[in-house]
Each structure stands twice: as C-alpha cells, then as structure tokens.
Length: 338
Image (tube, rainbow, N blue to C red; front, side, top):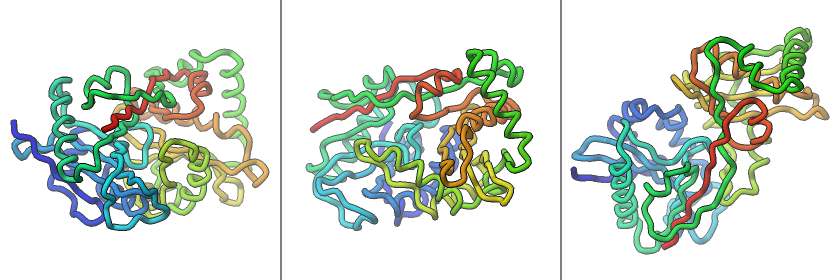
C-alpha cells in the first residue's frame, strides 16, 4: 500500500477530513478531539505537529509531536520553525496515553512499517536538522516497533491500571489490606455524612466550570515541573472546552458555601476511562485532609456502576495506587539520536 502523510499545524489548519471518525474508530479519548488539539497547540511552549497516516488515501493512524528547537522558548511560541531540534512524540495534554495510535488491531510488522514511514516523511518535511526523536510512554515490547538503530531507553514512572470487579465495591475492598480497607470505608462514610461537605459524581459540565478546574489543575501541574521537557499547564480555554463537552466525568468536593475543595477529572471511555487529573485545596487554605484517597473510592464506585473494565489511574503516587489494587505497567521514554 502507498503511505502518505498529512502534516497539520492544529493552530491554523482545518480539521482533517474524517478526523472524528478516525478518533472514534481508534478508541481515543476526548483529548484528541480537534478543537482541544487546537487549544492545546496555541498554548504549548513548542510547536505541535499532528500527522495523519493514510494508506491509499484512507486514514489508518496518527502521531502528535512537539518540535523542541535547540533554543527553548517561553510562553506562546513564535510561528517561525527552528532549523533543528528534537521531535518529542507525546499525547497532547495527557501523560497516560501515547502520542501515536492506529485504527484497528494492526499486526506488529504493519505498525512498524507505518512508524518508519512517519519518521522518514517527517524528516523530509522538516529538514536535515530534525534528526532526533523522543518517544514517550513506551510500553514493554514496543521498542522493537519504533524506528532507529541507536536508542537510549530512559525509564519513567510506571502507568497504574486498576481492573474493576463486576460484582460491586465490596469485592474491590476485599483486594486491599485490612488497614487500607478500614480507613477508606471509615472516611467515605464520614465524608458522606458530613453536612458541611458535598460529594458529587457526574458529567463535568454539570458540576464544575473551566475556571474552577484550571485553578486546581494548575497547582497539581506544578508538582510535575521537574521532568525532561516539562509540559505547560493546561490553559483556561482548553479546560473550558474539555469540561464543557460530553466525554468528561467529574468528582467534585465542595464545602457548605459551594467552594470547590477537590476535583478529579476522568476522560470517559467504553472500557478504560483515564483519570486525567486530581487537584485539591491544601488544608491550610480551607481544604480537607484525605480527599485524595476518598476520590479513588468514588472513581471505583462510578466505574463499577457504569460497567467499565477498569480505570487508567495515570502516573505518579505509584506505591499508593498499587496499595489500592492497581497494576503498575513499566513505561519509558525512548530517545533515538540522529
């Protein structure tokens, strides 16, 4: 088959034909919706390049990469492209997913060939100065699919995935050690009975505004700023579009005056929803202790009630998530120099 690349600047270029159909067929979360890609690209600290892979004109996959120039920029980046740099392949606004995916269950050799074609085509498009790649969120077994003879494998935080029981919350509690189980149950009962605290779970557009989500999310993002090529905090226009849509679930904690104390945002999915973020006011600013762990109880209750296979709990706090019954899947960044 003949492979062609449709290389797109989400800031300026129109949505590619059939994009939403492709996203849905590939089972990708709402963060790949084109209006969100555009909002993310305008606020990013490096130009975002979206590439649609087409075989004989039919879209079969996509890759998103940030163009990390040799001279780092701050704030909104200029439209001029740097002459040289690194292609940083990552999912926009979401560390729990990869920056490359395919429609359908393609065999490994075909995936390998498509990614080789992507690398060759993007290098031709960008020029000789763009010879190096970083592929993020690489799972065990995947390095063999990625192009390049010389690789540097950089272990990163594992990805936590929690399979949910079909039979009810008690079966999840039964997986946990006694001390953890007792503390979670006790706090959940206490929070539910507290007249000065409301706990709501449902569509984000009904429970929270974009500005509220941005305020708590920004504080959470700062905890991850010590990473290689740190991602910029998600901007207000992005979060307004995200929580205003149909594919995001919120767990919102408010005090008696309606002040938002804690917020979890979950990217809905038919089988494996993704826990995008958690943010909370610290106790010294009027927040409540232990909301973080109670949030997982509410997530599991929601996932069981909605018939989900499990939850992608994301990265960070790996040991705490393992204590909650999650499997820790090894992950790495694969650097391919020159």
